[in-house]
Image (cartoon, rainbow, N blue to C red; front, side, top):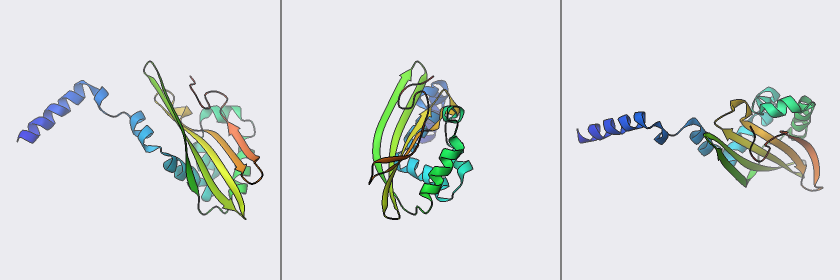
Amino acid sequence: MFARIIAAILSFLMWIFPIFAPTEYDQEKKFYTEQTIADTVMAPIKAQDAEAFEAMICKNIKDNVPDLAEQIETLFQLMDGVTSYTVRGGAMYEANRGPNRIFKRDADIRFQISGVNLSLFIVWEVNNFSPAEKGIRHVSLWNMDTEESLVYFVSTEGFLYWHD
């Protein structure tokens, strides 16, 4: 009985003060670790599903990278056959401007194809003010042996920091 009373009081307080309840932003921020970013990004790549991959890309990239379809096609061709990968941790960035909040995390995904060491670097964003800008904000594929950039596309604003 006592537990029910406490639960009712807590429910009432969370209804009055919703700030204590985790928001969608908080849940997404907690979910997107380096590993979950890698797994999320690699699933459509391994399945060669360009449409699913493009759906994860922020609106800014879609609007400002004129050869995006070709870049994605090149990325998929170069990564065809990836079966396993490792993930190295990256940087995090978080900021608030009034009620607006933004969080970015990097994931460095390493793998080999035909004996060549490659790195797929991703910047993933979570925010509470622009749903169209969530997701992938930076993609670069590097040949780690020659230090050659193979694929590169990035948002034109707020790639690492704040944007409106």
